[in-house]
Image (cartoon, rainbow, N blue to C red):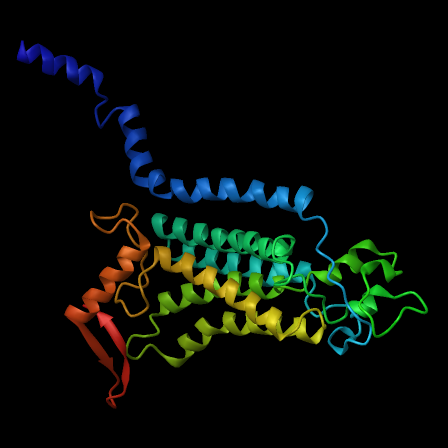
Length: 322
């Protein structure tokens, strides 16, 4: 009978008010939109650990000459920004700022995607930087260049020819880490990590302060761009310590900045949007399932139904979405 069939279906299907229905609804609305991100992190972290422990234990040792002035700089025993302080400046400090901001203006979805994006930005940068730093096992001529202070690290044997290419076997430095770290010049890990953490914080503040909107305020712009300045100072310190040359620092900075921008842009609209301070909904509407489709839709909206923002004096400030 039709009535009995519907009665049987109602028994088999959990109602929306039941415990099972509540769990399914929470999973679909709160957890499922982030499942791909957490699965990606669960894949990246073990791979990164394996790379560190089992595969990329030592870099490729490119041959060098003692009369090469590019690697004759002194070895700085005390760095301007050691690794511990790098983790504090570019990791802990931005995390605390994001945490305070998220709880001060608490919105569950916004807090979740902000902190999740920050973690993804740092972990992906670490993974990609280490992969690039050790890819010389495949492309030996592209990376694996010696650091500017390689000869000071090497401490070559007396009588070593100065005008011939030699290998690391001519080095006498007993400190294994200091010696072999001299071939890990490309790219700059400090620069990439700094721009990944502090860059993400800057992009977040730029969106929260809506700096492309009219009369955003100079102080907001300065505060939002200050993390970029901090990241740049960390990158410059690698040149002052003779740990890297300009090319290493630039590539590392661009790498970290690109990753932080990509992760931030995945969850937040463009800065020209009026809603740039709020993340995308957890469940996307039909037809806008990917980041690239969302960006394309915003560009089409700007072209079709946008407006130019001007100051009181008539100066052009940007284009925003209606």
